[in-house]
Image (cartoon, rainbow, N blue to C red):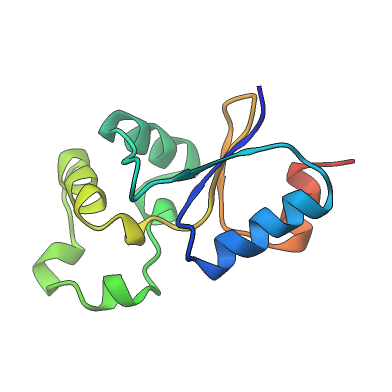
Length: 118
């Protein structure tokens, strides 16, 4: 099994992550989570692994800033999953699911060097 990168094909950060993986010959699967929505149970599991919904949501995104104020404070897991299903661009990108089931978000050269040691 190889790692899976979840993101959006037009996202610059996802492109950088994919280019890094290609450059270092790390095999991976890419999933466009707008075209292939992530199940609610998976989103909940990712949030739990990352330490909560706050770690999974990109609050510096334009999508977040344009949300109505009452939508920015989901009070339960179902509310969070509904919000992320409605606005997949709110998910911090990329989400990396490693072979061992561990999850991480975002991209940096040093972060990927630690995730994928050669």
